[in-house]
Length: 164
Image 1 (cartoon, rainbow, N blue to C red):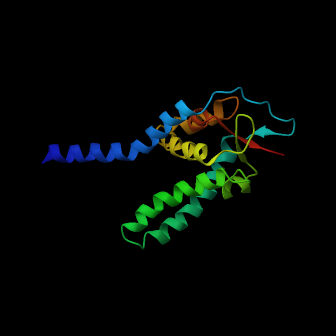
Image 2: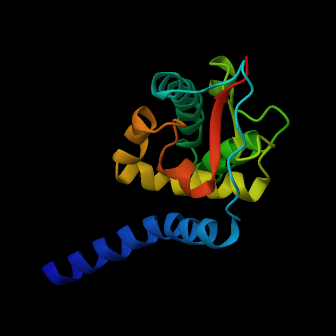
Image 3: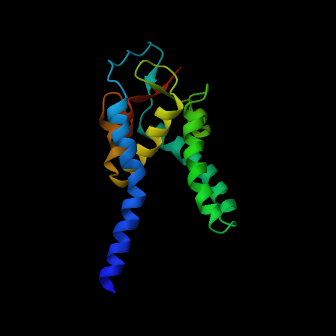
């Protein structure tokens, strides 16, 4: 009985990590490494505290949506996974280049050439960012790297900047 329970826990853990690991591998294979373009004088990299604040705003918005979806048994949980993914991927790849929280903090996300992200790179960034959650160090890296990049930004080759 105990052995079966351990097996199920391993299967559940692997199924939760699988999308992130697949995204990590695809980002490493598919994204071409290019030199990072220098910032324009008025631009600065968005630091840890600004990004944390933006993340909290997005978390509040998604928490409200999650509460509403919680009233729909089973399907609500599955929809929640897609809502979180699409919330980030669509907004990061939009012309605004930012989620609602990022816009509130005047932050945009761009590729290494300061171009808008494509939907699939934004998707890779989202799923790889879940690895940063597992290894919290991935987010704390933002405070200590020269370009203020977290683990997920290094892998997906993205930058968060304050454009003004």
